[in-house]
Length: 491
Ligand code: SF4
Ligand code: SF4
Image 1: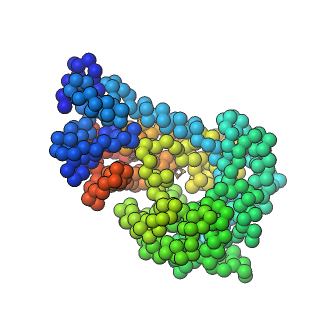
Image 2: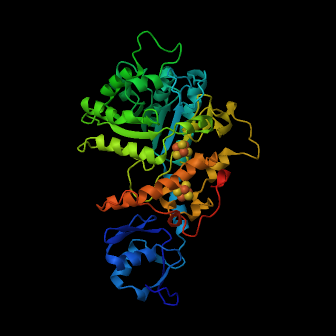
Image 3: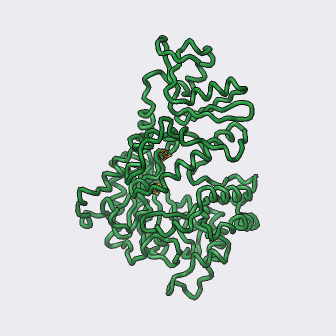
């Protein structure tokens, strides 16, 4: 391959090319376009390696026309002068603007369970019909009108949202009525500990137009009941163990709604989850009207308030191994698969969606009447970016910290490290909250994840299996060398 820039048609190898050696050949993968080329033999492998180097210039007449076409169409070669980072930025901005409006409503900060890892402060804050119903409906209406969007998703959240069912009933009816008036489609989801549901589960799901319920298991019964125990004074005489109540709720839910089974995993319960999947199989949860979806989650430091979790976190490698075991235990015929926490929809190539915290028109309403961007910040008043009602409006924050401006301006393509990262189109800097909090370990783990997993995800897409320890190197992630050390919010 020539590297002349004097020819009339001059191309550059994309900065997002990566070469993956295979038995007898190689794959060339482009993180910006998601294309894969498969080559056999040493010559192909050498060419692909060259195209994955930085600053490779290729003249049109140096490559056979059909090869050139394939390379250009797959985004492996781009016309000289193409600003590929601008393409990432454009895609990211579009994703933020076009994201559906999601309104997360924290009905109460109270919870009847005392999970040891819970980072939320359980307070008496709760939304009330008299004070908060109207401002909440107005907030939703304003957002819909301003954005001109025709769909609203409400996520009921807490604490335990069903501990304030009175407000949820009224707010759900009020918001649905507003949506009907505005000609807007409405849908809801709920994140619940599963212990305080009404007896008519199907009626509740229908009435609130719930399309998705997320509940959590912390292992088999002994571990689950110990970790998700009732708080003192919060267990009613009729309450069975939190495990038993949840199992019987899931039994009922799977007849009427999608259930995401979150599995909270750390080093104290990791051994339970294969058994839990077998338990789910025995109960027929994978063959119901709505087959259950499994979401393994690595318990980790969710926020500045849960730094104590660092001691019990699994390493990303340990977690990946538990996740693989869970995946193997799920029936092959099940129409759902274990989901990958870094790629919520499975490996689908370059990223096209943002988390709700970055969606331009979304918001999280706290039970303290503050508005937040990320659900994991609820109750952490110093992270609030506004208030539900004018009368609760926050004082203007000091010039040294303005979270509103951080969220508005968050741009992966300007982050000093991410800007130079080959995984940028897949990662978009990962979790923005980790950048806001300067959580260097969480940020580094994104890079660790992609280096270890991306070659295998790409190979699996074309039906190949690679040696388990094959990984991309830091110099493939940062082709021009590691840019700058991590530092506070600019990693
Ligand atoms: S900011 Fe991070 S924790 Fe919050 S919703 Fe986005 S990805 Fe999740
Ligand atoms: S967070 Fe890490 S892996 Fe993700 S884009 Fe930034 S540098 Fe790359």
